[in-house]
Length: 169
Image (cartoon, rainbow, N blue to C red):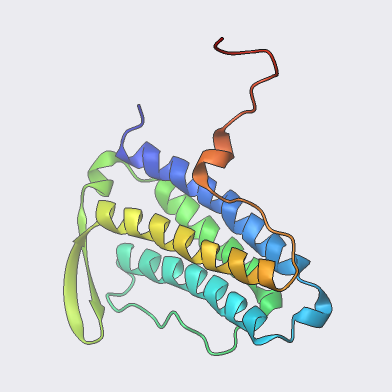
């Protein structure tokens, strides 16, 4: 059984794979459909995912207490890969250095002029769920726009197909 810090490192490893699948999905949208407002919405959602993760990282690291704006009006699709890469490397470094005591700790942040105290564990769970929620939105939009979709569910990340003839009965 994984400890708290190990579990979040494992969950983030899945998130990296799922993020890259999402970026591949966005890239698969036919060029003629990339002018559709739904494509712009999918890009905004993807940008928001990375911006939220990055924003909470700098707060958790104590570099600031104020959450930065996480909704850009017109993010640029071609910049998403770099944005996700930077966010993922920062989080990977943070999680690689985290232990269970760190995960059990608290941090303070300000949002909309109010100060909040939150356990790091709760925020890590929130970020995992937040990413899955928004990836689902992107999958739907990509599908509507004629792009290729992937199932980014966690269970599909590590489930192996059992060979025919193996198993009960």
